[in-house]
Image 1 (tube, rainbow, N blue to C red):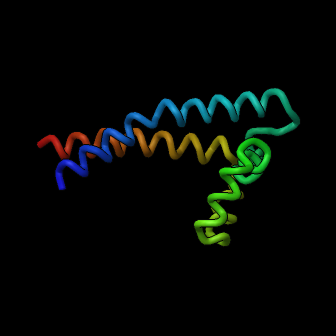
Image 2: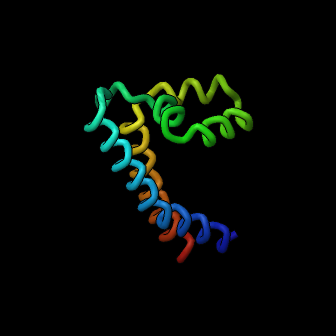
Length: 98
């Protein structure tokens, strides 16, 4: 169980740069288009830029739950997810190395 925890901790930590790249991508879209920070929802971001991923996610998960979470601003949700993911990874790493 300790090895699974360590693996998940490293996964959380190592995917942080990918999430930061998504934040930069969203900021570029916001600054170069008519979208604002609170106007670009996660669903609009996915439909406009990652249509294949949007279709794949909606084929696997409950659509009502996805509609609820994807209505929020993309930059806010991605930033929150990045911070939580980063701190969760380091917390797990500390707990599993003891």
